Length: 134
Image 1 (cartoon, rainbow, N blue to C red):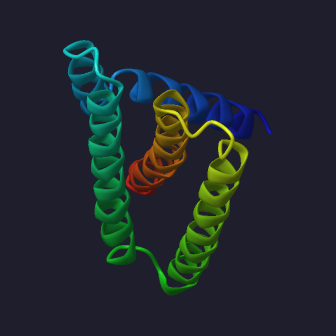
Image 2: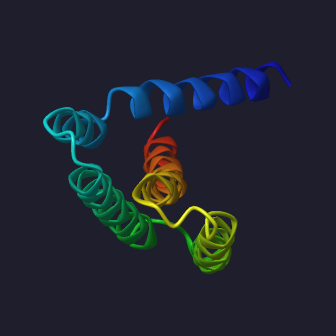
């Protein structure tokens, strides 16, 4: 039980630390800070989301090439369900912010969607790292 609690604590800390120090995050922040245009800020965030999606694909592919059959089935199922979750969340975000069709509302939606994708990328990366720990 003690090992499990340590694992959960370290896992959640690694997500917080890694997400705070991500190169993608730094590039996005630098891009946003370089402009006062909401449209350009949204482009910065969309670029970051695309980069996080690439990270998802990278770590998913790495894991599919390494995991035993049983774990691979679980990963594949999890990824399919996560994609459905992502689509549903994106629809919910768009629905909730429908009244805020101004550029600020669109920026909020853009950021929320990026955070959903970023979270999955970090989980897959951490799963990959945990798989390789001894």
